[in-house]
Length: 329
Image (cartoon, rainbow, N blue to C red; front, side):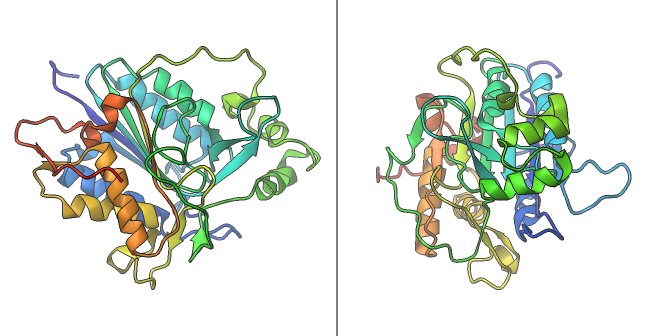
């Protein structure tokens, strides 16, 4: 980094799982739209944005496997210095993993890369713990059961704060893979009996590249408080996120998309280009946008108190003025 210039770095991941029984349609569109927004609205340099999608298998193309996603995120954190803005957008399937040991709750959250090498809430916790103090790591996850994807991050808007709701019938395809479907997919390749916990399959297939959650080790130390982690999730832990077909009235620009990703784009587009929208405002307005269109999912926010009211992606330019304060819902 030259001088004291703030770096703005992004990793964008879209998994459509084309040609599989789990195919989605809007995930790649989500991250391509976000790439354009990062450049046009937030001033990211195109060369500082890494995009991983699973629509190409050409030689030399980096696809969003679990190892490749974690490598891209680790490289981004390695480059970071105090004051930098790091951003991760994930659109794809999510899942819930039953715990093997006693702990709070019965399940943990995970995202599903194209090779099914799950990345869990523990992996994101460890990643955030490596972010330099004074820098931020903002994660937008448009996937099912995405609330709480950064382990131990403070809930600001979620099931127990800022409103909640029941997970009612989905209007389209859900970005959710049931645990049994994940195990069934992996069992055919791992040679491990399908009755075993997913950890056995993942370690057999991916070794040290499998999630830290699935390796025997002592409990990690408690994260520093407050930290730079900011999670904007497409739904609560007990809810699903919707994949919107191109012919749905809610489709962004007539293209297939994620309902949450589309709502984020709509909120940002509605705000004045010179107006900073806080993380809290973005989530609450996205909730309103989704409710108006009939979606039964409730985006959540997990971060420190200070980051809840900080501008989304750290806009602190003197030319940017905060958007109008929203009433508390």
